[in-house]
Structure formats: structure tokens, C-alpha cells
Length: 59
Image 1 (cartoon, rainbow, N blue to C red):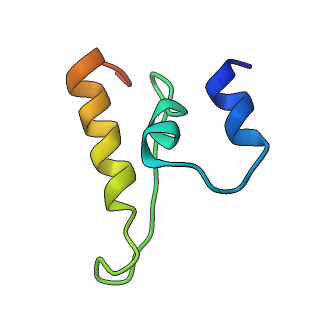
Image 2 (tube, one colour; image 1 turned 180 degrees about the vertical axis):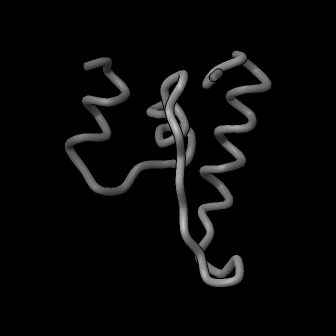
């Protein structure tokens, strides 16, 4: 387990960048929301920014 995953396992809440770092290559992300009210916009944005910066997560 890498350092990011180990840090996230200890608690239930983390910032968007940490959550994005937990998404590995070839993984899927699913979310649910009520007409966008509880959609995890910050996490989805952080995943996109990570992909633009590092090319990861990739399929």
C-alpha cells in the first residue's frame, strides 16, 4: 500500500486531491447525486486535473 492510500485508510474524510490520488490506472469511479446537489464535483475536478498533469489515471 502506498503512502497516499495508507493515509486515506485511517480516516473517512480526505481532501479532493488525496481522493484523486487513490484512483489507479485502469480503475473505474462511480458516484451518485441528486440532480447535481451531492455530486462530488471537487473530486471529479481533481481527477481531471491529475490526468492533465500526469496522464494518470489512464485506461
